Image 1: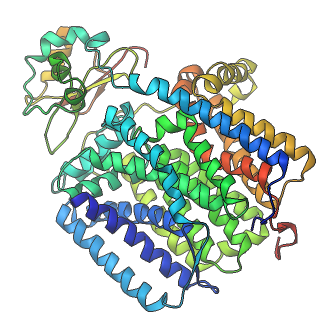
Image 2: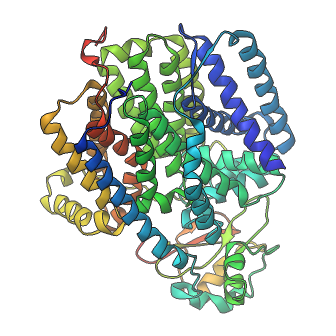
Image 3: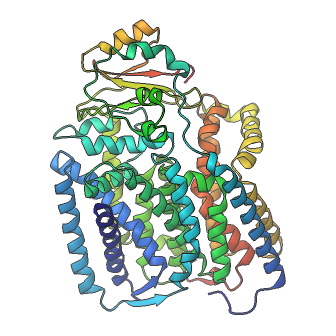
Length: 140
Length: 449
């Protein structure tokens, strides 16, 4: 158990130094906090797929995170949609080049995603089944 | 209302388990408020595993069945803890009300989460995505959840815990993962503060808690709704339980250590690595090793280990229906250990990016201070154990970075900060022990060491 004696001077100096570090860190956090929110930039490397998505027959659409973060941006709502299949709930999403590498999508019609990809010029890299495919960003 | 029910039931399940484990101890002493934070961790692990086993048992994820199962387990724990734990002594160490000084930081965390309610990328594309898959899986469809994502290697504690929260809430509300992230963050801080108070003055322990929260990457990543906060919590809990074992003569804290080791392994792949290293260190030290061969340790650890093994088998095999996803396996090349350029890239990356951009510089300053104090003060047994664990983990991570083929810089960009995040609470514990601990027990004379 820690003793009940007064703290030595050098310990108080070190504690004060740590206190200063804490203040510096929180100042940094406060400065960048207001700017930290999700920035959904539709398009990017998967933008050519956009025209073809209108032909993807997905059962239901459910707008998730982007619609809440960017309520005034219909482009984001269109790009980020989540199916409500109980069988294989996958997300259809696109994001900018700074983030991760995949598009996962689910089609009602078997094989429709192959047609989608062939028309867009992208090559499927992982195939779940006739309904679901994954397109991996080049380089990943 | 459902969320409050979820929080209370989770906590009380953990609390009753803790009381029951305490009753096995010779001294039967419950150390408040440290035990309260440990209870939350126990409740999280137990309810997540009940959710996992309920899917296997009922062949589907059913909210009603799961709630009923957890209530039954809680009732049993409550009954037995009331029966056997009546004679437990409650010992208050430090004031729990002082923890309210962290209220402004809690509000800041909540505000930060309100800016991104669905967490960071991997939260909604991996962790919460899996929870979605669990929550929505119908009868005989639960097998798909182990195949329908691109990173099927990580264990499933967080997704099942979030799904358990949604089961209580009745819907997939973002409030559940937000609460998980905030609660686990503050529980980690609580463990650090009240664990440290065993060795240093209370004011020093509170400063340590604030320091941990002020680390920029820790502050940001703790609310990202990733599984790393679980790893950080359980790793710290294992360390504290091992250290408490050295101070006591009973099996209570070693039993808890076994439980937390298994939860740690069930959280993430890095958790498996940390748990393995911790187990090795425990095996090496005679004072701790004797507890490993006791039945309660293996019973509490065994359930989670069983869940982990089943999880890994399901993810790697074709037992279940679902897609045969072509998961890209990482190739390893042991000869890369002798390529100096890879080592150079690692240390250059750490210097250029990790220390400054993620704000770990303040932790580096403290480590240097602690190192300076080490010149004058010999390390205690407590500190040596923590150092051995951290050194082992650091060596394992470096080894993996070197031998796994591929772009090191890309891999480090994705993982380096998270690796430091997972052990940051333990590093803060160690440096504060080294700098401020005075009246620490001399474990070199501990019987059996």
